[in-house]
Length: 344
Length: 275
Image 1 (cartoon, rainbow over the protein chains, first blue to last red):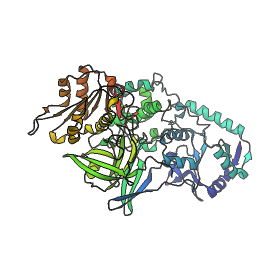
Image 2 (tube, rainbow over the protein chains, first blue to last red; image 1 turned 90 degrees about the horizontal axis):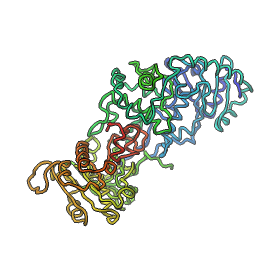
Image 3 (tube, chains in turn cyan, red; image 1 turned 180 degrees about the horizontal axis):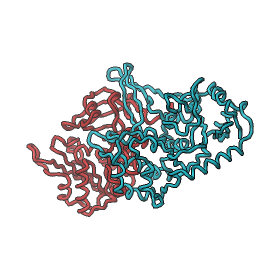
Image 4 (cartoon, rainbow over the protein chains, first blue to last red; image 1 turned 90 degrees about the vertical axis):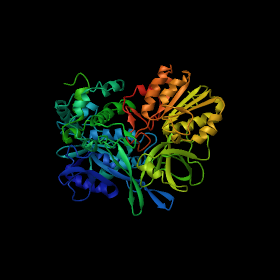
């Protein structure tokens, strides 16, 4: 394990940014989100939860897929895919829950047939994770088997008052370590272990520390779907879609065409299963009520996705929906209502 | 360049046939004049007019046709409205094939087959019926029951009357909803007609049409003693990607684009009622 003095972090960012694009939590207009680092930017590694999750880096809110040129009745398709050999990227400070969410997205986008838009970004990125030391009341990653004190990634880091502790895990991580090696010194195992123990003690005391997920099994799919509790749980939902946009695992997208003076651009953008036109067709709509749309979102995360992916849940307990829903609806309430007997 | 499923191929419309007042059949080949890709009966393709939108359609032509593909498209929304205005020579985009096909090489082989279609529901069945005709000796007796609102709404009537009705060991029953001048065939709804015909319940059945027709026809078949595990249908939901990633065409834990569109009735029974 290596350690880098905290006062040298700016130097570290600059060194990485010399040869790679660096995405890091930066405070802008009062909000902390992942942005491209530059000299003078206000980095905030201490921020526990960026407003938006790092999924933007691999699955942008909007991205162009292709262009069409038309001439009379003729049509030409222009590939506008980004060439990943252009420049490698680093995303720095990814929390354990958000890293787990990338694994959830991988199962969707990298499954056959591979989504090459996602894949090229994923391959171009080195992911540096950062262990949590001050989890909040809205955190419940441990319910989904995430260890906030030991995130995976190409490099795992821990931060305390004096140092950033640095542990490469993969070849990509080793390569990045070479770049920053002359700023680092050996050591830090004891400090990291102490921080991990302290964080674990906090985790155990959090209000959502023990959620019972035992009823969310594929064999209970129809029973859960038909549960009368959905009506009451969804009553207050405005269908604003905030939960889906701040969620690190929500991956639904729309594909649309945009006419420009140079031809048509086909792009994809995030979409939300909470919207009434999400499933609307010329001849009908399979989900006409907000209850059905609300149910879809949680059934997808807790039952459908695990059924398709060997039991892996599509929630990582980041708690963003708990903090952001204007109606105080969230997945914790759903789990407590439908999850199992041990939820009180 | 690496293959990307969302990037379509350019197709050229080489023929447009007006089947009914609101259904047209479009013949499509690649810009090199060859068929765009291979498919199996029941599979679908994403067809688009850039700048307007992209929609999933069943491939109406049989895989045994090695020259071109056909799509029978009903005018009922923003995209199909524009598609209906397209002329021969127009370039469009096509990608696919998507979804699971009818089990023509597995469960259907050697069986007596019953095809029941309503309106534009004939489109996906035309592919499988012509496939079965091509490999006629692999299949038993074939019965087709096809209904539409009026005689003018029967899709592909020319092919049905000149080819299907003359095929050995293949019975075709047509019906229209209300009496009409110039029609001396059967009048009445498909579900009732199916019951009247007293069909052999040992046949493997394929239903395709509006949800209400499927619901009542299935009930009729069950009364006649058909086994649900040998009754197939196709589903249609909103789709954007066609490969189980955009997240909207699911029924429970199944994606219609990937796990369907062909489903056995017993499979549908296990899914939540949300389609």
